Length: 128
Image (cartoon, rainbow, N blue to C red; front, side):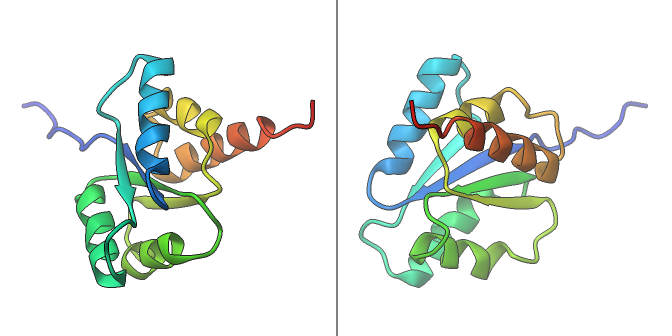
């Protein structure tokens, strides 16, 4: 008898305006990997609607939620709905390097994938 299929890890990118869609598009172009990230915008919605968008994007499976800023509506909405949910990790300060790293580490558990991506994103911040 085979083991039941495990839900695959995916990322949810939550940002103000069109930033999330741009980051997802760029990540897919750079990595060549598609369908592992979902963009969520706070545009045109109230707090409850944003929370519902985020929850729908996570859709019950293991996920890492990447938020643009370490404060504000996107993070507050994420934490209100997902703070206690098992199998979900949250990272703030999303950047392109972080997302590219993430899509190449989908076999990791959410917390490890989040730590790995955050470390990669932090290393990408430099003054040339």
